[in-house]
Length: 387
Image 1: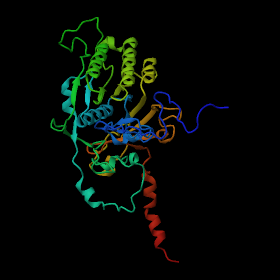
Image 2: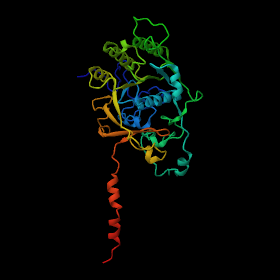
Image 3: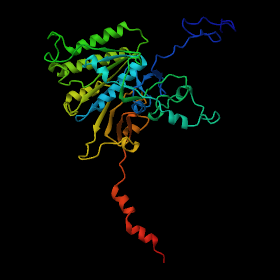
């Protein structure tokens, strides 16, 4: 027999919602500039400055905050360096804090400028009808920012641009930059650096301290980007920096900062595999400490070939192959590309001054011998004979 009266509300636990009670209205703060939620799980993502690379990153349509990518490159080309320039230029235009490692502040002069929007393509395309517009969720509506979309993303015209298009011929003007570039302490050997350096302190540890002080002093709404071009290059780093104890401790500390400031910090690192091949144990450990690993393999140039023209057919030719070794994993279902097998295909990349770095599936061009056989004179004579 119960001694509790009917139709009476029992005392609820502290913090437990009472049914029928009005919940206080929580104001949703808008995301920082250059940041939007991922379509997979809603985590904040930012653009790498390359639209095709954003689409490749596990369907998140951008680089998730709190992660880093290691870009390896074979040979003597600098495609990975151009990829970093797009990444830094995108951050400066969006108003982010960009931290440069290894290079002096003059590196900013090589950043590409904003490309002018293509007025012809916009005027030729008819406006879409309202009846035929697909009704989808609000967070999926503006995710059509492909390389062909140019400077204006799909969706609402009033929405700020997530990924800008840049022109390698132009230079980034200071009036367009809303963010700032912070050079880190020098990592060069004493013979190339005139500033006095103490032999006891490691240059890589000084970089971690510099990043930590900048992150602690900045407000939580600021977005930071770490740009590390040509890691362990002998011209930029002292000989002691290439020791496994120094490099692995640096990547461990950088990974700790990424996890601590998971809503503010991203990083992209480039490495020359001609100096440090993937078969070495050091590079394998470096790959394990990074969330994603990509490899650029430039195709050998044919000797005596004519220079590439400005036509679209020539600029779309593959200049190298792209291998995706690992992508970030966020939950038990994968989240790093396990849902789709697009990254398992053979990918290629091509670089254009106006279109930037375009990543697409690799396909062999048609053979010229088959085309000549089709246009042979014997076939034309047989077609003209009447029986």
